[in-house]
Amino acid sequence: MGLLTILKKKVMQKERELQLLMLDLDNAGKATVLKKKFNGETINTISLTLGFNIKTLEPQGFKLNLWDVGSQKSQHPYWWNYFESTAGLTWVVDSTHLQRMQGCQRELQSLLMEECLAGATLLTFVNKQDLSGALSSNITHEALELDSICSHHCAPLCIQGYSSVTEENLLPNFDWLPPG
Image 1 (cartoon, rainbow, N blue to C red):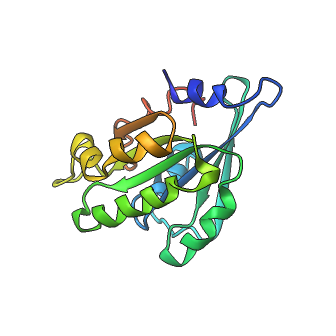
Image 2: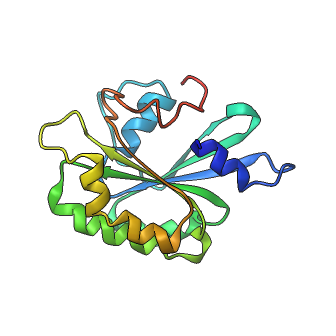
């Protein structure tokens, strides 16, 4: 079952708009994938997301709003402003930053305990797979304790390794979206 299929089930037929919230700890690569894949821009320079950015796509007759919200620690308290009406959460993980994996796990667990996100679909991107020393999706899955977190707090889970720079393995996650 694809992500869009799962998300569609959350939306009443008359309501044809979905919100997908994209979050990460700073420098995990969320802005890179949005800039390159969805905006078709070069990634020579990437700046931190301050506040939020919205990208709207229309796959299969649905309006999909991708909300990219700033990931600096000072912006975490404001994330809750974007939870309402969120059908899915995309959590981006830097698979090369082993020292931050525990903090990443704690932050994700805290997010998924939010009542407004109860039942939201979780799509976890394990980024930077093109770099040496990157953890695999399976090892990241275990390190983040996703089975335990998701058994209590979220709807279906998908985890996928990818590279936002080379776009390797990115399309299988977004194969339901129109070309960027």
